[in-house]
Amino acid sequence: MIRLDKTPVEKWVTNTQLTQFMSIGELAHKQLWDMNVHKGSKGWLHWPAEDHHRLMQQMEAIAQRFRAISDVTVVIGIGGSYLGARAALSMMQSNFASEADQMRVLFAGNQLSESYIGDLLSILDEHEVTVVVISKSGGTLEPSAAFHTLRDYLEKRYGKGAAERICAVTDPESGTLRQFAGDRGYVTLPIPRDIGGRYSVLTAVGLLPMMIAGLPVNEVMAGAAEAYDELRQQTILENPAYVYAMIRHFLYLQGFAAEALVTYEPQAAHFAGWWQQLFGESQGKDGIGLFPTMLQYTTDLHSMGQYVQDARKMLLETVLDVHFTDTAHSITLPGELDEKSNYMSGKSFSELQQVAVASVIKAHTDAGVPNLLLHAEGNRPRLFGELVYFFEIACSFGGYLLGINGFDQPGVEAYKQEMRRRLV
Ligand SMILES: O=P(O)(O)OC[C@H]1O[C@](O)(CO)[C@@H](O)[C@@H]1O
Image 1 (spheres, helix red, strand yellow):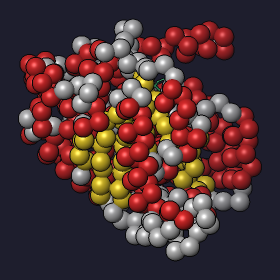
Image 2: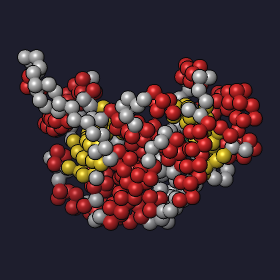
Image 3: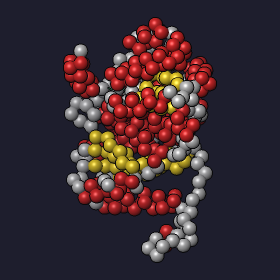
Image 4: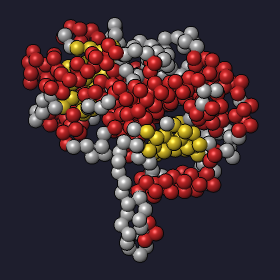
């Protein structure tokens, strides 16, 4: 369940302002749900309500086979073909998963570090290895470089048997990877044409790595379906995704330049990375858009807290306060601590964390930093699905408020062309 508490932001954005903004909200709502507006980019919108039985079966077969023949799967991808899976694994696995679990899925192709790929190759010999290469376009430089390096490794090690150790997740019909996979006889899974990379975590792009890691994807999809049912029906001002989008829009119009997604759970930190791409690529264009960044509290309070409190007031904070109901920990501090720390005696870490959330919001809002509070509670797989869909709705709705195309990313081409020019 996701609940928006807008009390801390009310001195910047009032209920009256939100109500006055209703007609623009209504228009954005209509544009969002009209499949003819940005036709071909909104396959993700009704996705949680659609029947994915066949896809689930295909993925289950691949996941089972990969788990049977390997103890390490290297998942290759970048951006939307990486961040969602990484966020899901990090949220749903233990902070200290057993070594076997941790080794099950490794990521590659998300940077160009020779040291990283070298270290990866140097440990693979000790394991049985499979590879999932994910690229919608099929031609992105980083995953392509990692894929061909690992493919070559697998071919040298397993000979003809290498092909059965590779799965390609890509465009259903075209692209270099699709063609290469066909020529080599790899098993493939499609990324629907009408679902862009940053909206694709609930397709095979995110679900296959989750399955290979042994995570309950049905629960993830159930969480997304629940969010779909709720958010589709709620009126504008009752819809927390819309209200969140409207408030951050108002703050942007007031001159705030950046939004930090603040998390207090280390397991939610990578989720903020997924959120960052979603908002950065969707809304950062045409010279406008909030700069999406992330802060991991309380850790970052001891490094960035000074800046947030005292520096130029250009940042707003959205606090994603998650409570996992499936992690049954209750850790209370001992009755007697040292003289200076005794005020904490008998308190649980959750209590301390909640006091931190409230205190930081108070201190930051008093200093002129707008804060929004999103409470998110539930078991981790369901909550993950719910959060993904919540932010997808908020982001695309916010794109319509801004009057931009929230589904393209023309700005990433410039550096790619320059790289190509230097490499070809
Ligand atoms: O899945 P692909 O086509 O390899 O793209 C990976 C990522 O690269 C981008 O195209 C940006 O360079 C993102 O939009 C995308 O998520």
